[in-house]
Length: 256
Image (cartoon, rainbow, N blue to C red):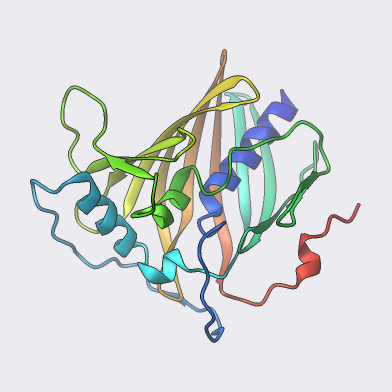
């Protein structure tokens, strides 16, 4: 059970925080990241807005080109993982990404984890953890709006869901997004995907965002995983978020 809970923590962190993984990058001067007030501007969403228009509103609400072209992202914080009413695992996490590279460190009393992708291969301190590509699920899909083979469409339900849309990757991974009707930001999303032959369904509720260098990143959020005969809940709180800060290449080298 403990290993499964830590798996959920790792995966939740990966798909929520890796918003810039595999995104295009541009050469520009790095500025010192500073947090700004999180009050979001009010947007107008037309009643007949198409799924693509809703997706573009969401991208702009999270920073537009600044969100899409982030060079690096660093997030440090805390998380609580629960698989039952009586068992909760407290943990801390550090996530670092730069272009295609990323690193996850999750110290905890039960199963500490370090996982690194150096741009070519993934190395983990725990065997058997494999994730869908980081740019195929969750908020990272917003960076793919308008790209070939990434399909933006309405939700496939019988009743029209207001201010919602789906993005599907070329491999068939998809995420359903739901917008805050006042800010245009993502308030929640749902995904279903296959991990090592096991179907995993997850839903995310975002409670608070932080504006860092005009990039809007989740700061507090909760996530539910539905696995076979098991529900897992994870709550996150980011303590520090840095955008476009220098990251040394040796960060993406696994050190035992």
